[in-house]
Length: 260
Ligand SMILES: Nc1ncnc2c1ncn2[C@@H]1O[C@H](COP(=O)(O)OP(=O)(O)OP(=O)(O)O)[C@@H](O)[C@H]1O
Image (cartoon, rainbow, N blue to C red; front, side, top):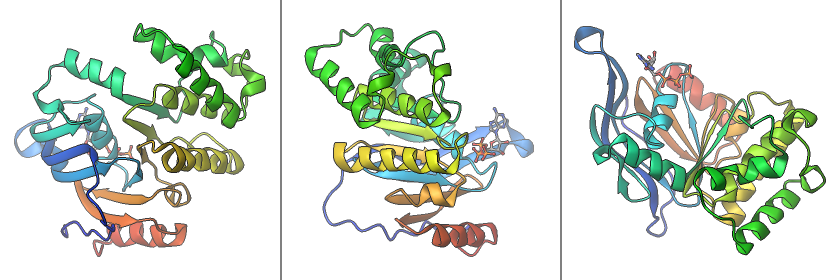
């Protein structure tokens, strides 16, 4: 595999929200072991919208699960918001995840019996945090910006797929987490809703400084990101600043052919 190529412009020191240092994640042992992550060293920077791409089985989900403290690693070091995940037990990682991480999934993962606003407020309630005046204003602002103001009392089943994903994004943004991990967030959406959701994620990064890491197979989705990381066989094989969908498609072909 070729070494990581970086053309991302670094004009000033940027704060890493997630850092991998020489990370291995192996499944099984001996000759049959799968190297899902193989000596990965990379940073996800504050305020960046980063797309994580790569062929099926290349290690994208493993990367995200490790970054979010959902999976432990075989060796190396992983830092989330400056905290050493690799040195923490499950309970510590759960607290860190609850306080610092937001998630957006392909399947929306909303609670069907709760209203829109109750879904958005759920992370606060699960963390037993009271919602103060500032946070209530922020949530109201998010619901308005995301076009959900008239829908706050609706249940998820009364909303379109695009609206449900916007609720999931509002929920992820509500607690202003250090990083949002989005796993194929447009996988269940039509092209118009996909474009709206991607534009919202980009706006969240640009206007609110929200750090977002998004796994996607879709070059059009990745073209909304500031940075594109490509994983193949557990290694980061490409690291680019924003590219067009055509350039991303070509990059993925190059990676499959081993020329990236
Ligand atoms: N629990 C597990 N046990 C054994 N092998 C696993 C496990 N989870 C993942 N793997 C293997 O690790 C490698 C990376 O898997 P991963 O799910 O991270 O890839 P991916 O890039 O997210 O794939 P996809 O795009 O198909 O979702 C694959 O070879 C996969 O089969």
